[in-house]
Length: 163
Image: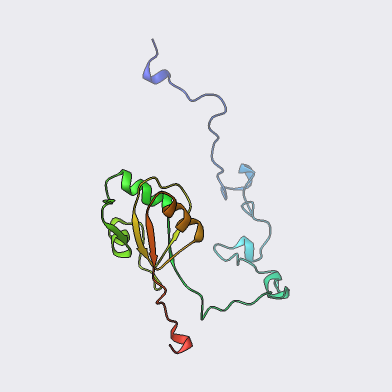
């Protein structure tokens, strides 16, 4: 029978911690394993991306491409698989039309400036009708294949275009 005072860890399962800065006899005294002076020997000031005064690589390399942030759409993405799992859990009634407000109340979508976009990741087995801002072609095909429908709303107007 094993007694509580005889219990030990397996050999090699634990290591003693490094006792840094406890004198030269400890083997980790004097500079405390940090070398000699300099910024990295100090506490909390190792700057990420700093290359010792040399121009950092992220500033040396040219920026490529064009990003038109003024006209990009920031959709909230919802997958068909997550909608099907919500139907299986009983959060969505298949008789009702699934719109953005319903998706937000059950937690599948958050606030988004441009609405909800439906994607075809995962499978859907229930016949449902969607009313969302946008949907991928694969999502439209998947929903129509089982007899459902997707109504997309392309009434998004960009403020920058003056419409």
